[in-house]
Length: 161
Image (cartoon, rainbow, N blue to C red):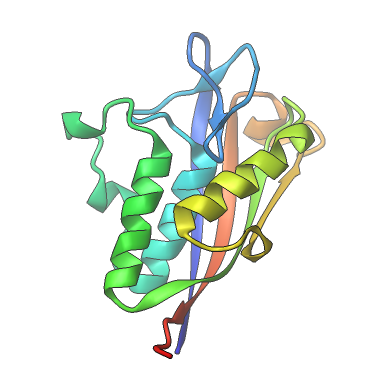
């Protein structure tokens, strides 16, 4: 049995915050605003997995009104979501994601993002894909006001054997 989920997230870029994407600190003069570390990529991935499970969204599971999640690493959130999937008998078959940002250039960091996401998901890196694109200076991403991310995940039932 397989289940498919899609996730989308967006965060505003602001001064005096670290830029964390895919669990990797990316050197940049701005960071993403949010209650947690605001890792827009991992938030989209969590939403995709939760969607595939029919389990709501990241806000339902990790509300920004809960001080327990203040500044938390989104890798911890992803590991928790993966444990929810495992409880229902699913593992990540494959995951495809896209980060939309005009700046900074993300290509040098994508390999590390893939590795960290794969470890958090408990699967090989060959099952994880991360892409980055710009908007050719169009929209809020193109103006450098924020970063967004999309993720699609295929969950597959764990087979005993």
